[in-house]
Image (cartoon, rainbow, N blue to C red; front, top):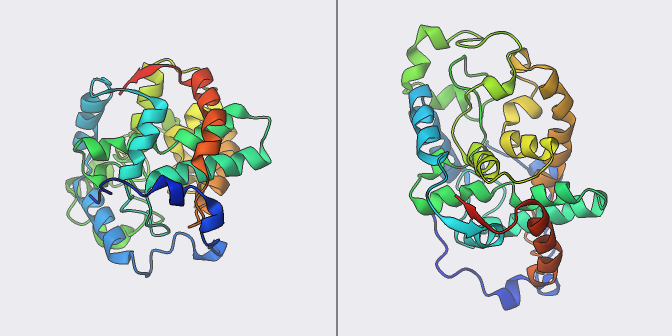
Length: 286
């Protein structure tokens, strides 16, 4: 795991007039074929796809869903992401907290009337604090996918990374449905463990009044094989299909707001603190 010691100097980093505007071409995002970050990204997925078994994930639910690891406000948790660079991300190599504000501001520009949606943009990756509390990044970051059934071809590095996973060799998990029933609903499917599910469990544990659509986005925003590639539809129920447009809408901001142009977080803090006070107030259990 890469940790940024003291983080960047906020007097420089948060002033966009001092930053180059390096907006990327949309076609260059999620490039897993090459690039200077390829080896780091591939190794993260290789470890994930080797070690994340159905039993492993059940253990992680027990370990983390009790929310007994820390007491933090939501803004304190966001600030912790100053210390984290996501090793599965082929697009950026700067601390994750910047991406939080980029996503939120992208949503605010196009959805000024949806305060809960802006809040989801800000906090969607906060579950990555697990990586600062001892969890390896391969159990925190990256795209998610169902376990207990066939690993679909759209999973990143699928053909070269699952051969050593014990579940890959079990016949009970090799079919399209595996241990699941047709159209059982994604809420009844065990996903690979990561920051999506952890933050969802934290918000549920703390009874945060985020609308159903927002909670659903948080839980499944990294499920690219589904919302981006159209796989696993045979496991979806009516609710999943109703929520899919929201996840797709969110993905536009999660993915395409990534840029080396870093925002003036100091001027944004008041707006987003008001949203936190409304939807995730006070000190939370993590």
